[in-house]
Length: 136
Image (cartoon, rainbow, N blue to C red; front, side, top):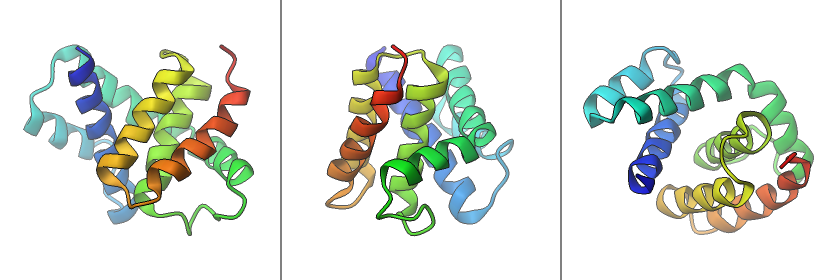
């Protein structure tokens, strides 16, 4: 279950990356990625909830990134790191479905897999600061 949930987060990240970098629409991208990956119905809904939640709350999420990573203006943050942070901050501050440590750990793992050499450290640092706002 945890492996499939991690894979679902990876798909949500891929969708967010594509939406952010290419400008494809949020209603088309998840459909295509999910269809290609054949997720369980539960994880299909999870991916859609994550993507929709990030898109709907993006300005609030981006404000958190700017507050806790002031040296990195949001548009200068690498696209992959920006979207890993968006995904994790949605899970930490808005969705409230997973424990704080799980959300941070999953984001760091995504950064290790998809990001650059310093991505995991950057993501961990920002999310450790953001987690002080989490209500659980």
